[in-house]
Amino acid sequence: MKLFRSSPSAEGQARKPAQPTQKVTRRSSGLAEVGRVLKSEQPLSILDIGATSAANIRYFTAMGHRIYSEDLLGASTDPQLAIQDEEGKPTLDSKRFLAENLVFNQAQFDVVLCWNLADYLDETLVKPVVGRLWSILKPGGALLAFFHTQEAGPDAICSRYHIVTPDSLEIQALDTQGDSRNSRGLTGFRLQRVFNNRHIENLFRDFASIKFFLSRDNIREVLVIR
Amino acid sequence: MDSKTGDLARVGRSVCIKGELSGSEDLYVDGQVEGTLDLPGNGLTIGPNGHVHANVNAKTVVVHGKIEGNIRSSDRTELRKSAVATGDIFTQRISIEEGAFFKGRVEIQKAALGTQSASQPENKFAQKLEVGTPATQVPAASTVTSASSSGIGVPEKTPLTEIKKY
Image 1 (cartoon, each protein chain N blue to C red):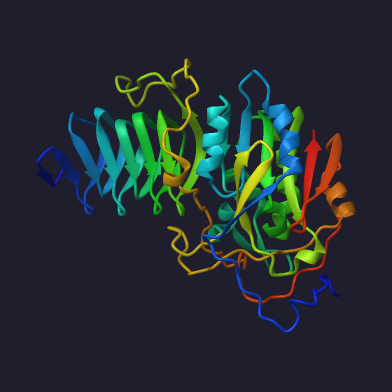
Image 2 (image 1 turned 120 degrees about the vertical axis):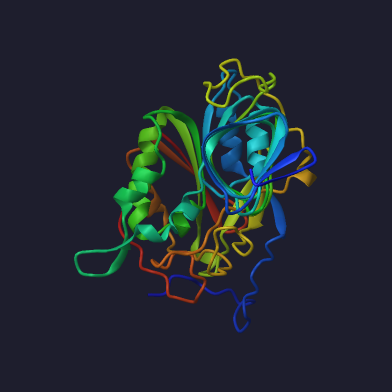
């Protein structure tokens, strides 16, 4: 099954991984939509489940909001989560994962920033995590998630996102080398799958509404409202 | 404490302390501390080998190692690139280096916290305050860890799995 179309320029060439220090800034329509929620006079509770970003912490705390940071992708690499299913195949213990992560009160958050988590998270964890996110999000709360299109290719780099302005993001390739918990010298996370629009709609079927925004870097920005 | 140099007390890497630890001088922890750490008006540095399982109250907190517990600093908190911090942070200023891991809540507070005890509940009158360190000096942090045996994040050219129905 061919999942990706290779671009003519990419054929016959080895893909060069993005430099970890390389940062690209672009407009984000999804973030701009979230910004409407963030203009609230009341302090909001915001959960960022992407790679920890000091810029995001600074951005939200400057606005008077409460920011919670939890790196789910990093947490999913905990070796203790590895188990075997009934057929003896290696899998992850999703119950244990949810017992140790995303432990919050129901309807606690006004905004959840998923970034590109779902594209890189292990298959067994995606659906349980989305279910948990639904429960900890307030009714009417917003969730922002990014999904690669097929054009992005299988080597699409996992990035971390820094909010620069209410409608622009700085995107930086993740680098696990030098990370204090990276004992295996890994250089990054690998794209696990590509969701099409129907898959995304099904994934968030329990939510009240969903909006898609296509960005220039082969990313679909998806804003869902509980 | 196994040694003391000038105004800096030091907990060596082979030292393990359980209980309440308080003082009026700067402290460098490169060993293990479990309980509470109360240094109002002074700085706490957790060294690369340090592992603190305690609520911490200090003027400044610099983390190179691991801390599990809430950090309450009246001036600033720094998570260096090797830091692994789990817990809530209440501080006036914060900087997080690239490579640091953080799990918890950050609350930027204007009021002085130095007189509070580490075991006291959070300040309910917290006010917003912009993080003081400029963006150029506060590189964003990366939190990616090593891949597990499940194969997550393995950069090898393994084929993508087929889309499953959601």
